[in-house]
Length: 403
Image (tube, rainbow, N blue to C red; front, side, top):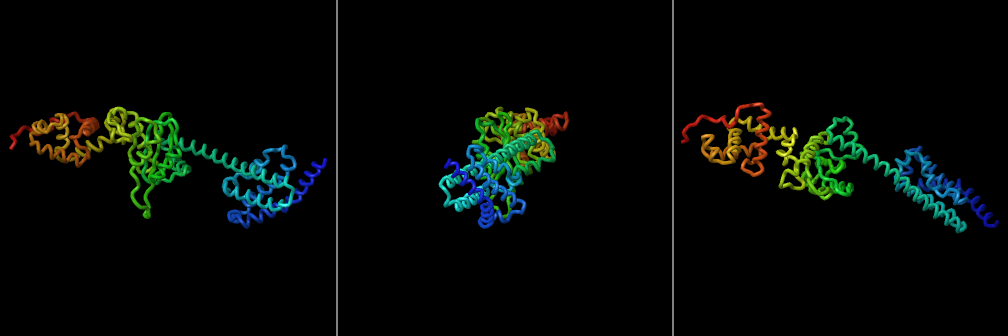
C-alpha cells in the first residue's frame, strides 16, 4: 500500500510541475533554438503544442506504464501535418533535447524512479520521432519513384505531355543542358544511389527507369556557368562511368539532344540500337546508337533512315560535282580505284581526290571496312527517298579518250 501511495505522490508532484515545465521549455527553446524564434506564430504554437503534449504524455505514462506503451508515438501523431513538412528531423531532435534537459534539471532532486522514467521516455520519444520521419521519407520516396517511372515511360513512348517539365522539376532535376538516353540490361540488383552518385561526380543529373529487363537512364548535363572551370565530360565518358551499374550485354547511348523535353528522340534511337546491337560483331560497351545506323535502318527504324539520308546522301546530292556518282561507282566496283576510274573515264588520282572530298563533306571514309556499309545503306535509302528510277551508275559522261 505504501508503494502505491509513493507513486501517487510522485504523479501528483509531476502534475503540479506540468505548467511550469511547459513555460520553461518554451523559454529555453527561444533562447537556444534560433529556428524556433524565426518561425511564424502559428508554427511556434504547433511546436509548443507538441512539447506540452510530450510533457503531459510522460506524466500519464509514468502513472501507468503498461496502459499505453506507445504513448510517445502519439505525441507526433497529434502534430499538424504541415509541421512535419516544415520542421526537420534534426530540429525535432533538438526540441526533444531541450525538453529532456529541462526535465532533468527540475527532477534532479526527485526519486530515482522518476529520473529513470525521464531517460526511458526520452528514448521512446526519440525513436518515435525517427519513426515518423522515416515513414514520411519512405512515402515521399515511393511517390518520387512512381513519378520518376512515369516520366521515364513518357520519354520512352514519346508522349507529348505538357506536364513533363513540371514533373521533372518536382523530381529535383538540375540538368538544364543537353540530354542523352542510355539503355542496357537490368542487373540483378539495381544500385540507384550509386548510379546517381556517379552521375553527380560527372556533373550530370539522372532519371532512372526499369523497364522489365531493360535499365534506362536519362542523363542530363548542366550548362556551364561563367564561373565554372573546365568542360563537362562528354556523354560517352559519363556512360562509360555508369557502365558498371548495368547487367552484362549490350549498352547503347542515344544521340545528344538539346533538352529533356526532346529526350524521346534519343530514347528511340537507343532502344532500337539496343534491340539490334547483337548484329554488330565488334560491339563495344557502351556504343553509340549512331554507330549502329545500318543495323537500325535494316530493322526499319525511320529515324536511322532519315539520319543516313541527311548526313550522307543529301550533302553529296546537293554538291555540284560528281561526288555522288563517284561514290556509287566506287562501292559497286568493290572499292577498286582502277575499276571506278575506268567506268568514269577519269584518272585513278581523280577518284582518290573525290573520295577525299567525300570524307571531308560527310565525315565517313569510303575506304574503311565499316564505313562502306554505312555509305551503301545511305545511298540506297537516299535513292528510295528521292523516288528516282535512273541508275546513278549510268549518269556518267560518254566515253572519251583519256589524256
